[in-house]
Image 1: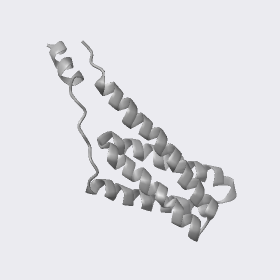
Image 2: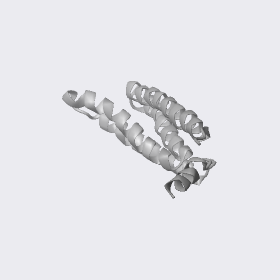
Image 3: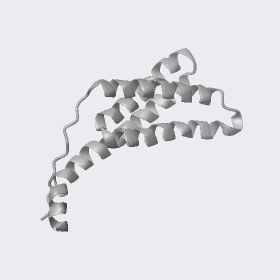
Image 4: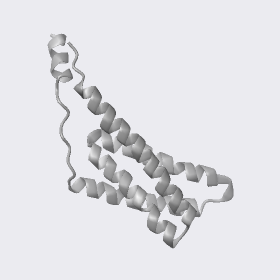
Length: 129
């Protein structure tokens, strides 16, 4: 009985995701969260400045992975929105914080893209007997 159940779950193809309205919604959410995070970094006291800069990693990785588990493109939208917020922030308020946010999020996006797109696609293609 358990062998039949395992056969059904292992051979099941991964659903095809597509860009939809929720991708753009999560991009907007990522943009707003990024902007708030950069303002907090900008106003951080010197003794907490390093922790404030590390918050970029936490606010991209954790929500990005949680959202991407449900739908990969929604997670990508969140990260792209987060990343794009660094550009106007660097032009209007602080170039270093905006640039740091932009490049850190691009780096995290590439890592998560490799994990979610390449690895999960490869693992779902493996057939066990």
